[in-house]
Length: 335
Image (tube, rainbow, N blue to C red; front, side, top):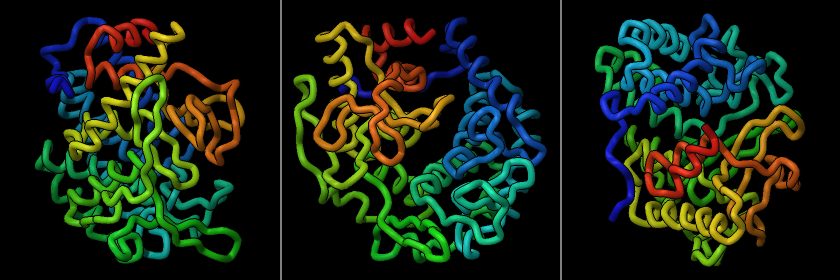
């Protein structure tokens, strides 16, 4: 009960909401390349499959909210989908971990042009697949192009034994390993399921235990680098309708823990994963990680406590799905 609000539409936007939407949209044309790809971070000419999914999300959302018109969306989608139909694939299987946005070419882990690439991220591909499906359904004239993008991909190794696998090239070798932790794993698997690829292992939740944070009982993943943060739960509610009851309950508990921390400390709390403008360049602000609440770390789990922040993205996201007094406080603060 009271999980997520009705969809925000152009008709329900306040003037402040519309101003925020236009501001958010501004990132896309400012960082667009002739390929239709958008730089993953301003001033950084590379993009992941997750970022490409976000570009599709931004385009579709801007059009639905009346920030751009249908003609602009159609022209951009034609360019972008044509690029995606010709992307070089890692090992001829799946999109590479990262591409140069200017030429849509694969790069290695050091962002050097590479004919081999660096492997694929199953989590990133799950987000991209989810948004390809949404775009194909919302805009049927592009559905054939969307299907042509996915028709080239080969999922056999990614979906081995019904478990989500990613690959990573290190030196001359390749690691194929399970990918995804609680929240991210179910969110990404939902993207694959929309294309008929069922990854039952992603919903087994075998590596889950309970912990209390700020007086709230939460479930957490007991595997390594299990960043328990807001992003996959907010996205799963907004984009996929909640996924399942367990996922929805965890989302509500995560939000409650952040609200509870604010009540106890008077520190507005909305945590998320975010790019930053200094080393380590990308951080996870978490509710729980490796036996500790409210940790901020880099990709590798190393502490980055001085980078702890209030996430604008998480504040808008929690407001979108739980529009109560606390999320309105968050929104006012980040505005």
